[in-house]
Image (tube, rainbow, N blue to C red; front, side, top):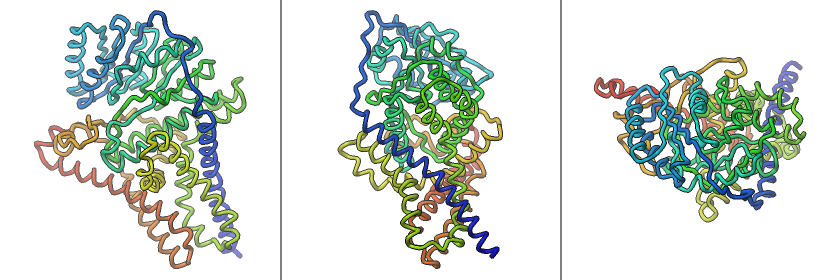
Length: 506
């Protein structure tokens, strides 16, 4: 009797977790529906400016030795009247990047640009603090924010600034492109993830009247929108999401332009990717705790509140995914499910949690790459695998946010890599290394754990579960392998005294 009772408990817990994950999957299908419904809805400026407004380009930079010069070069090619353009270099660097930026600012001034170089030693508030400090000295009516690894096309301002002739528009966000999309398997998967977010989520939310967020870069703000919404706060790691919701709850309208692309560099190593994902995940939960009560107290429509809620709590899915991992084995021993149960419960849940995700990203790739998206099909199982493999890293971010664990804004190292591999940015001459952690040990343990789960499934004839378990096995082993490989590479560099002097920890 006790065995039956405990087995029922495991099964109930398992079903509760997968049912909760199914909600997120169903929401992706809702996003797909909204995107398909509104995808042909044109977005045109209310009118065009008779006299172009003054724009301040803000470049928040911290230790970007490899990409700082490229950024300044790209900004100098922006096609906009120089008397209407102010460039702010917001430098918090502690390495030779400062020399590059100071030299670059002098060259830009000689070329006739209005350049302000602001250097901070203390990094108070990290990126949000730099943006806030720059805003005080900004002359522009509009603020164009670019992270260091972005390369804006020359036409970017002339194609976007006219949307602000509508006085209700507070922010215009452009879609991210990918300079190094085909650098590796990891960058190709990241590109697909980001394409789904930008093309489907941002477009669907914007055109259906829901809230969506500024993505931290490649967007233009109306200065008065920032100021009337309370300015930049640095009590969360996602100052962009925080300000976006405060501004929209205050009545400002946001606009997303999916057809205007600003290319950027994707993280090329697993630990850099982990650091970025941890920051985004933790910051979103911090913002959720801060703003969700205010969202429900506001006078915005109910559907907007519901969509905003799902948006803000979306990263709790990683915590649920980790719980699912832990419950799989106990549930497999407890389960005595019939074929009818499998088709009535297991199959619908699989469709809601996994097939919906694949459907979501397939639609995105069809619009990003209409002619070649079929060549990317083989990558889609790896999407699920990488999401599973990242569950420990991202669940840690969720837990830290829930328990108010404070951590600094850790930048993601970028190396100036485009489509090809540039060896001088790697190996013995690498300046920046993402901080290593003990997480790969846990990922190795989960790899062994899912190997045991697959063995158990084979012995018990649970053939339907094996593809599902393989996704987790591949995901954890892939993430662990790339993380440990970076450990070893860094260890070899530290073992060489000459190379040790060249290393800078990001």
